[in-house]
Length: 328
Image (cartoon, rainbow, N blue to C red; front, side):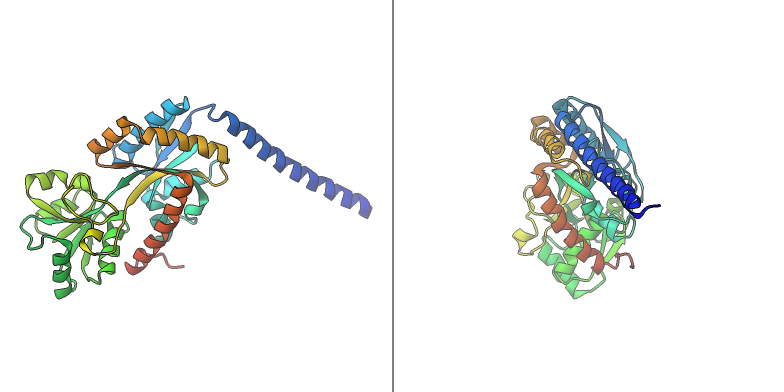
């Protein structure tokens, strides 16, 4: 074949490739202006009936009203959230497939359960916060965090602290806290339903848990909360100070939010963000939070992105200390 013809064919093919890419971007941009024109899928990483699922369904109902299209919850549990993250990451970045994400996007990455990290998604908005607390039996000799820390330092490894499972958010929070204060405890993983029962049965000395699992026992006088390991006081226990208020520089908020596949057009992100802002700030959503044990806590896309990046660094440090990082 003539060299010039070969070059011309290759050049034509290259032009078609560039033109095709440009048309694809143009089509996405045009579609973004009319978004949404069909139902949106909100993927939840845990089974139906879980706390994440319950919150997501309340959120989806509000989003549907705001966007004028159904927002359908799809449960994709497994591998600590990795199955759901993998599914959404593989979808077209057009705003019609979203993930109800959390700090788990970092824990599943650092534990080796998925090959990509949080940067595979575009943040849309933070919607809730859950504040981990440290609780003990009501007859325990400690009445605040400092008293417990003194006991931990006096007998390294003797005090057992339960969590909701190895690599779970409550495990990472407990490891981070006791690492920060220089205390050596024995971390005991349980299923979420068993950890409080084990504390009540005197099989462990303390737990780090979300408030919802403890409220009834605190009201009954069988448990007491020594401190909130987060940035603000927990409304369920308004008289319990945070770790920072007790002179300990540590906070580990569990956040939940919405993210989309990387490359989702900015106009689509902004429409979703606006719908979420109105939903999260509504009296109905806040009332559900009080009932179900979460804080309505909106943050727009850019702020949410910075929060995820900062939290990712903290998760990596805590998992490294706990020996939970996957070997490269």
